[in-house]
Length: 130
Image (cartoon, rainbow, N blue to C red):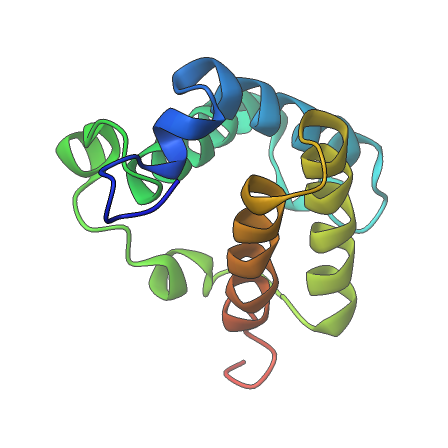
């Protein structure tokens, strides 16, 4: 898989079903985490799950549905209302890493996903801006 051969991670991983399952597994961890769970209102849990799925699909080369529905991702701005410090970042990464490990084999897809998620989680910290 490479840009040179025209195969996106979205395609190589299995398309929409892969990302739906990844986010589903991620939210299993979120729902049981005492620090992160309160950041996700009950009445928007399904919405948050859908938005993350669509964002990841778009980011990794799939359909642009996220952009069509919500505009530019503006991840930093969208996360500013939430208190995200080192503990929240680390807990988020534990949930995402567990989902990635359950769904992927060691190798390029896993490495690419985690190579994105680790710095992205750090970038979402808001503790320096509150």
